Image (cartoon, rainbow, N blue to C red):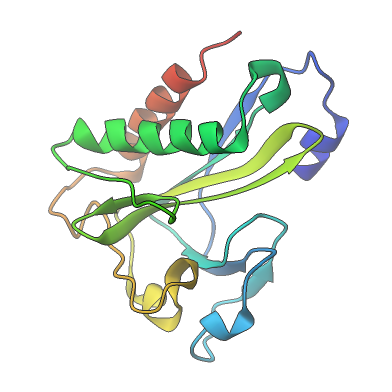
Length: 184
């Protein structure tokens, strides 16, 4: 994604990359290592995205949002809003009632975080993206202050009683994101 962003031209089409990571903690540029509370066997990767610490692992939908903000006349906050909106719309289609939280990017259900955002903007283009907690083990979140917030509860679609597979969540979220980023 860094190479793609570095090498893209104004005419390069925007892309959405869908993937999963192995069990990994990532620490953003402004992240504080003390937000990793315990020594654990899960690797900690320093990354060039914004934000604090989070966990990525199997069962979590990750989509890198490789968008030319300049060409779309978007500001970063507008991009964050569109990403959150895609997650909110996806969750609403399966009967979950998500919400935004002022000053804390991401998506929440009953005060618990279900989706995180982390971006980097270079040359007017975004990379990194979002993660939505699907059928995954939430235990690794107990070893961190998620997104730098002490005591922030974290949830998943499974913890909320849904039995959607990762593939089903990926398809729904990708469709919602594609609607937000119609070709220009």
